[in-house]
Amino acid sequence: MGAKGTLFTIVTLLSASGHGAEIDSFTPRFKKFPDGLPAINREVNKRIGKALEMANQVSSCNPLILEALLGGQLLSPFYGQIENYANTSENVPRFRVLIDDSIYRNLPQFNFMLMSIGESLFGFGNVIHENRLLIGTDKFGHFFDEGHRFYGDLNSEATNLDEVLGQSESTEEGIYGRAVGGVKSYADLVANYHGMHFWSEMLQAKFKTGRRYLKCVHEHWVQIRQFNFRDYVDPGWDEGVNCSEYQSPEYELAVMSTIATLPYEDVRPSRCPVYPEECPTITHKYGRLAPRLIGPKCRTTKEE
Image (tube, rainbow, N blue to C red; front, side, top):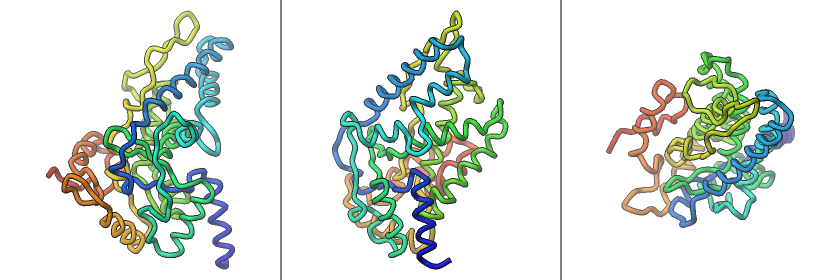
């Protein structure tokens, strides 16, 4: 296949993925703007409420009908509904870095061209604040949409979790990640994982955590817990802490060299992980799953 054919194929794959653009969790690290999760939490709870109202009108606690109605409020086959809300609503404080000003600005020429195509198709990704963390808005698509996909692949007791996490990882190794865009985001994998838990807690409890959102009372769904992203978000969602891997040594050198030139605060050099003290905690949190969810740079960081 010639260069034009290769480029056409890549553009097609980027268009199909819905996650073609990357985010920059480093350049705006110390920008001051309000936390974005409260507005997103309100929107998600509003949508869950709509789905429950419709479900109670047409069924007697039928989980399949509930799943379909929740999907209508939260999911999209192309571009996640909550991701889109986070990217477009005037209620959500967010920050976007243009590619020419981002940590990807010094990529090898071909990689920069692909990144630029992603930016032109989807726009470069936004980030929101959650306390001192920076969370890419793409993570909300991973949480709801990819999380639902992989929840569906789990068996009733989630005993095939390792297999499903392998499928999740293959998306980051493949056309949605390192193979095309050049970035394998472990933060994406963490969001996928927590999305599986959300759908389990909302629908059929494949994970035996005891946390549920609903119960059936007199053949009607009753919500017993409000949705809050803070039940799920941790430093593993932040690509500045849960460091990504890259397509080639040249690609990584270009990114890391650019990060090293960024300004910093509190005598902390610009590096990844930005907050190394968080890494032992999240590595311990995920236990045996850490190698699938936490990048090697963070996973091997010791307490300072």
